[in-house]
Length: 115
Image 1 (spheres, rainbow, N blue to C red):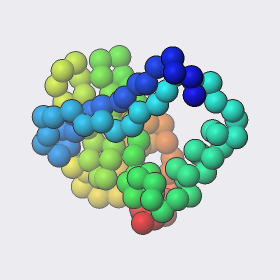
Image 2 (image 1 turned 90 degrees about the vertical axis):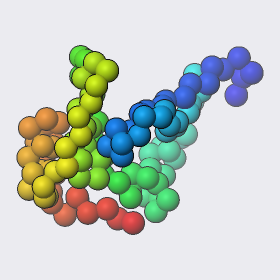
Image 3 (image 1 turned 180 degrees about the vertical axis):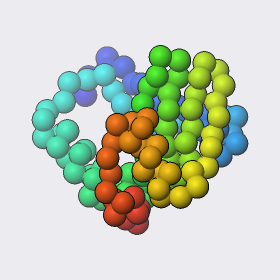
Image 4 (image 1 turned 180 degrees about the horizontal axis):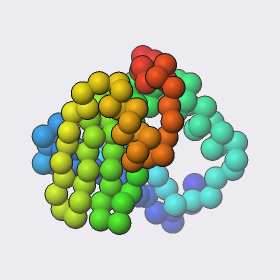
C-alpha cells in the first residue's frame, strides 16, 4: 500500500440500541486492489463463522434523506437528522418489510443466523 493512500472510516450512531455516540464500523483505504483480494473478502464475509454478517442479518439502503436498515428484527428509518426504530413483530413482518422496502424476496430458512 502506498503511503499516500487515504484511510476512510465509516461510523454510525446506532439508534436501535439507544446510543447517541458514534461507533466506527469499518475502515478502508482508497487504493486499487486485485480481483483476488475482493474474492477473498467476499469469501470471508459469507463463509467465516467470525463474520458479523453470519451472526446478524442486515439490509440497508440509502434514501434521499438518510437510510433505511433492518438488523436483528428491528427496522430503523433515518430521515434528515432523526431516526425511528421499530421492533418487527415476527418473521412474517420481517419478510414483508424486506419485500416492500428493499425489494428482496428471502426464503424464511435464510433468516436464521448461522452462528
